[in-house]
Length: 289
Image 1 (cartoon, rainbow, N blue to C red):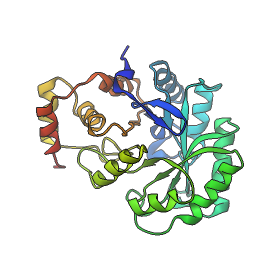
Image 2 (cartoon, helix red, strand yellow; image 1 turned 135 degrees about the horizontal axis):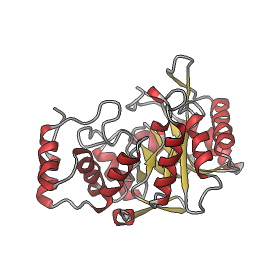
Image 3 (cartoon, helix red, strand yellow; image 1 turned 60 degrees about the horizontal axis):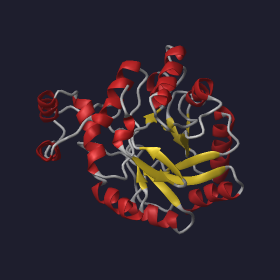
Image 4 (cartoon, rainbow, N blue to C red; image 1 turned 30 degrees about the vertical axis):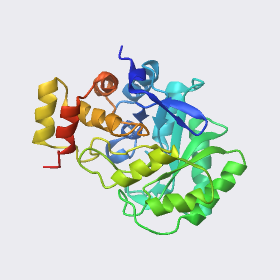
């Protein structure tokens, strides 16, 4: 079995997690909507991830909606003591599967209670305030109201730690004036590097950076340069792309998602994949093709 501890650890809030985690989004149906084709397979993936040492799972009650959290509860409850489940609020799903903002205080309160109920928890370890912005990229604007609402729920004991998702540097600074921020989850990967400066800024503050779509998301990374490097070192292109993220900065936590046991095992092997300085230099020059 792969030793994922070789990827290192990072402390988020008061909890130390392994840098190689698991994102549960793909456990829902097509388009992250409705039930999966094979619920037993989804349960098996979660159980193997935890059995393999994963102690950081990313989810949200608007995945499905509700379904992903219900599968996590079925597979893992009662949860291992070291397991950190990070969820998010700030959106809901339309009847057609659309992603709709839900950023009013009552929306945020409802989202927290939905996560609590479907995960079977009395308190959520980490809740990311997802700012919809341009859906997969941030846009400037005050987030004071949203963070204040989440901080109120933290004071009530329903939320232990607060994170942000899809935000800019100035929004992180605004949020820090309201509550302690322990992580930021933005889109970032080998070919989408708009957050280079933010990764470094957060590293200097001891704040975790958790890239969503680390493999390109709904449009997987395609690069002849990446494929060539992967072939040369005997790995898959996706393994190399994940390994590049682990090498990029010590505050980066990975949450690659999959509904396949085979892909899960491939992803976890990244913990033991070492990249030379020469290979890292080649990867730094890779761009989307």
